[in-house]
Image (tube, rainbow, N blue to C red):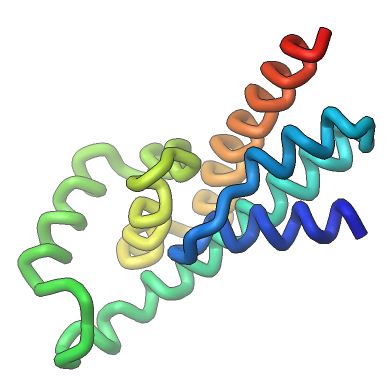
Length: 141
């Protein structure tokens, strides 16, 4: 149940919804739960949450002309241009606060092949949780 809770929290944290998984991840490490399984649950949940962003991004063209759509055509073009400058490798930074979720959304808009999308996002997110785990374990001595 603990691993499912972490998975769900990490999943929600990767979508455009406000949630934070690092605190729960750190607390569970300190409580002695299996480090590898915690890392796997958090990384998998967070990566799949970003896949949801990518799916939403792939649907943008269907809705961009609607009144309620939150971005103008100019904003979309600027985002596409920035993404094209750095390319799909920028998905390695999908874990960053503030820009990570929009990055994965734009990765969907740009139709990055799913294999590349998932692998790059998973590497970035897995590395982030590994660093958090290392910091927690190091600090707890």
